[in-house]
Image (tube, rainbow, N blue to C red; front, top):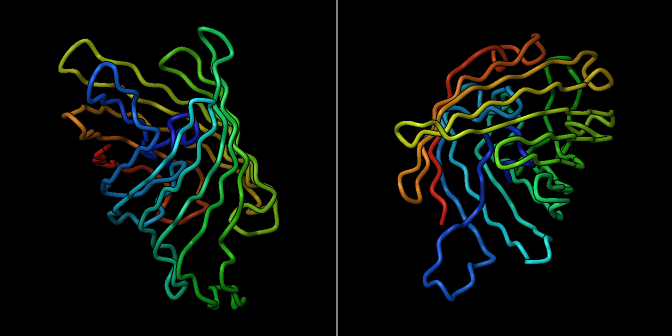
Length: 241
């Protein structure tokens, strides 16, 4: 989802590196399209362990302000109608010094086509009940490490607080032009779900021109989401342009 600093997981990076000529400035617009074997957000499958397409568009100003949208196929529970997640965000990013950078953003998770339905407890879930906002604050350290804090006072549309703490990193390996990635997080959902869980990932990726291909091992502890947590391998592809 979004930028590396914002996601601290699998979500797509939206940078656009190419210059047509040396004297030309890079475009402020960036786009991406890709597919994954399983959309795992903070360690938990959002597609019942099925594949998903994903796409993004972002505008970034030289001042550090940016805005964009990221979308993916989702598949939660039967009859809820939620088939697409659309994340709209706006933020500001700036270097603090030569080593540390700061990023803050507000993100709105929207689940398109969600319909009113009755859940397994017999409760009526209204249209748009999944939608919620999240404030994201991150610090980047050098080129390879970032720390993330995510806060929502209405996580998963529950009217309860959810707080996510994450760290992620990447490092270029000395062979095969491979990149090693990893992340760890703690999701405090005590208010919303009565429990918390941790997530971890380790993976490798390789760039083929504008295309990046990766393979990750992803794990989420506890049993808050049935078969959608636990461990899995995820194949990712992303084309940036």
